[in-house]
Length: 408
Image 1: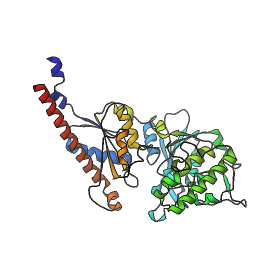
Image 2 (image 1 turned 45 degrees about the vertical axis):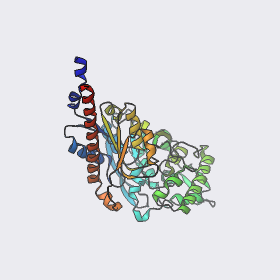
Image 3 (image 1 turned 120 degrees about the vertical axis):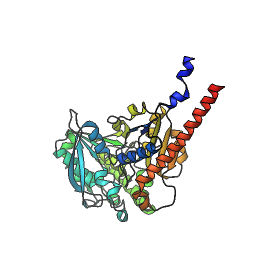
Image 4 (image 1 turned 180 degrees about the vertical axis):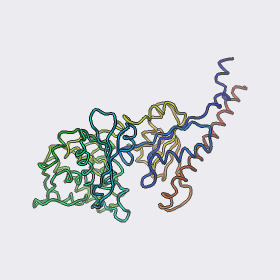
């Protein structure tokens, strides 16, 4: 009898549900911390007694620096650099706390992110990663002994050429003149001269957190997959792909490094290739880096339900996106996972094979992109509330079925 009482569903129901919220940020709208707060508000409307844990996630893109600095008790440093359209922007880097080696953490999005490119000027033929090189130089000036670069949310497709130019590399055309900025200029590249590259780069460790699935060239190459998202026309995609092919060949000529087939080489508009091939950096799967500093796995062990979120959920999500990573880790503990998204795209059902049990768009009626961005917080709260009401119904049915079995 005592054993039956210990599994009484009424007693189990008295235990508050522990909900772990582990979302990405919504690009150009809300940061991951804000997304988590709005989802938490929606959850608590339905289950005010719930224990809510928050683990805002980063993947190398926006929020990477702040998340790692906060996790380690480090410091943030403001700096002004060249933005992706060639105009000055206010940017930053950080130093991690509690490390024997003075480690500067940089997110490339802070100098060359899509958010910094006005919609009417989105053209990856022209946008540059020059400011990323300026951030690296500023960190070296401040005494960095290690550079940890986060790759994600980029607005460029120049292969990191601008970054290398800012650090002293010479990218030359057939007549020996420097090429200009932007992915379109790579089609003019004839030779790379690294003799003037900042010598301090050889004395520091260079690591980058990248999407391991992003390749520089081919059908899954960065120009073909992400170029259109950054404003490239079909004709420009072909030019960008050809320029990156030329770039890869010249990197091999200058350094002996083959970036054409390098895993993660296509990260952030090909910046991964330039970081590894021209600067001598090492590329790492981004979650191997991020999880060294965040406590997601520890929080998953405490949860009953996991809610994740991202601006878009589609067939690309399993290829290194935050919802899939969260879901796969949750499934190691047998936890149900709900994903909320701004938009639901083509091929989304593949996510059922990667740990996501249910998904929903936060948009319940047609609206403009501007309206969706402006009201993202309210939409997230309502969507989370709706999802938890469905969970509550399922829990009630489960309790009722358990009671009927016991009665029988």
